[in-house]
Length: 337
Image 1 (cartoon, rainbow, N blue to C red):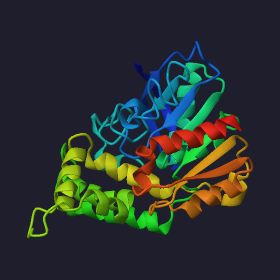
Image 2: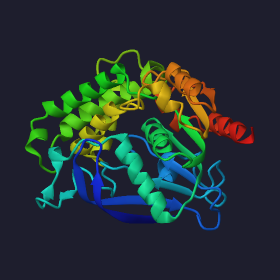
Image 3: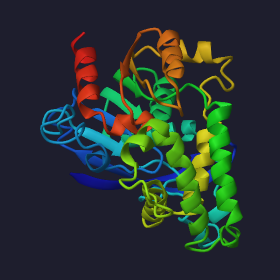
Image 4: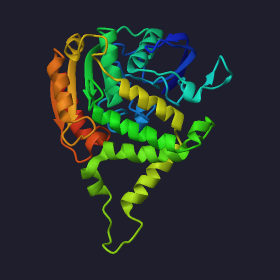
């Protein structure tokens, strides 16, 4: 494993602002020079990082379908995140202080551009597989549209062409939770932590859904008046996120998520998706309530060289992080076609 950084002096953003002195952190697993024709580029999801061996076990790692000894894996920590790439907690070179809420609006087109800069820096001509789940799919399809023939194979997992009003409503509910924490507005280190816990609790409902909670959070006793497993689980997950994330980064990524629209300033979704020429696999999960399967079926219908496959899972949107065996078999079948 190799962890590296590159610097981008000036990054022009879609919103019209320019970020100066941008740092970008990325991981490489395996030897891209030894296997230049089998590079897998993984785009990570919302609060993840550029180490997919850590958060995608069963898919990335020795002995799995994306084995770095056979298929080198590259993953970039996305712009606006808090794991080494410039984001709201980074120092603004013009003020000498963290950006906090002054960090500009970023979109997945900006994030795709950062991926392209890293690809150029590494001297990679073409990626064998470009893939991502959830907002990792946003990055992947934007990148392939903006830079045609970036990838030979595009694998889009539980993702969508445009953030729906349903998704934006979930985002706004989480923003309201952040804003209800008075420390969030103070723009201090640790500001908004209580709001972040509440926001995470809201998000988990959209990721896991009713079926998952009813399986994993059932109480053993029928006599409880308090201390319910579902209640303590929400508390635990909120506290766990606060230890590794921050409210200002979370807010930035929520805004980016809402802006996702492949059809923006490109005529319409049909025209934009019709320009993607990579051999494409679109994977949906039958229980997903955040990005329901009709949204993946739409992608598969509008991308010219695309096929659709479906995972059965009780774990809803998060199933792509859990149903390793099903996903592996689907990817193998796709690559063997």
